[in-house]
Length: 334
Image 1 (cartoon, one colour):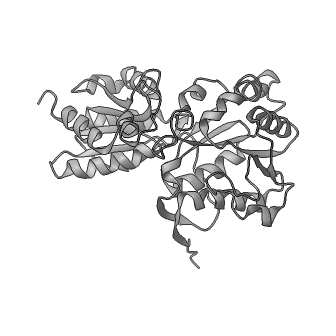
Image 2 (tube, helix red, strand yellow):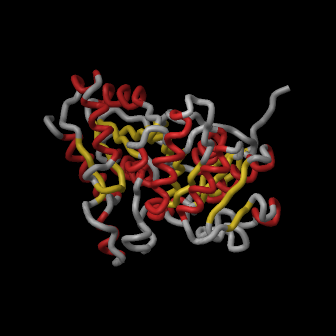
């Protein structure tokens, strides 16, 4: 007798909610804490309806203090719980850096593995909603550079559910980036529980002329750009990293070795951005000798995100920018 997996089309937001709901039903140690996540249902509506099912003990509204939220989450994780900490905007993780960076990230190492901090930090990130400079940042690279913290940035509803379930079950702190523009995007997602391993990239589109390395919302823009470039007979391979730390260097090297050209695309500012790390991975691997053109980066401007919609759009890579950069790279040296 063969079993069938039931899938249906749901939004990214619904996939995140479903992952948390199903895992909370399975594991009584999982709970969520954050500002306005209860009656209000969260700043973006992700936890809407969960208070009615799980009650205020497991859907815990907190004071407006990200430091207190992070401290509470870290302490409860040390005591055997599996907290999911929701921050309204990724920008506000700046207020909880001491608890996350100096405490949660270090404890398992400092106690020789006898203590662990199974903590998920859900962080709505990125621009595109007119939320201006203090509510639109992508701060993933701040945490990638901290030993002991893992960083995940899914681009599709399917990946969001599978990676969130894995993150909740991980015994280390995980920053789970949710780009705000992805919440309403849709995709096929199984109803059943399933997990996707951290540290495994996904080749979202096969190609032969050049590789684009990207993640989060930029994955969708790169796929759209690749379709446009296909009309010009430029065959683009799009590698969605999904997990920034741990990082799937094997898939990166394989793809770049195959195509001989690589464009790195992310929304965070170019200076100090994750693209620099990706460029180093390529440069230090066997793929470097197979390059037919320089490694190129396309990233956000070195400026705060403006409130003005036209300026906001100009501050981060758009589809037309990706098309232009990839076209230049594809024809370099030919």
